[in-house]
Length: 68
Image (cartoon, rainbow, N blue to C red):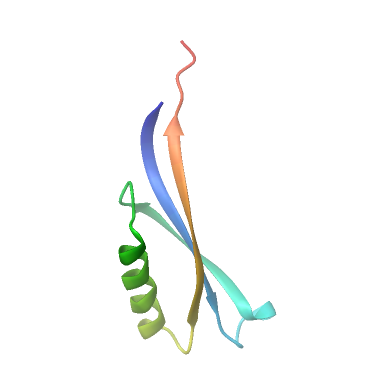
């Protein structure tokens, strides 16, 4: 197996969203994001938003698997 890319799905809450939450996907992040990096990133997203608050982050690793 070889690492291809890492994505992160950030869930933000805001009364303006249908259901109160919205998942925002981001692609091509560092291979192993740390809790500190995620916290800084979510703080930046909240500062740039119109009242969003961070709920959670889902890290998705994409890998290639050869069948030979």
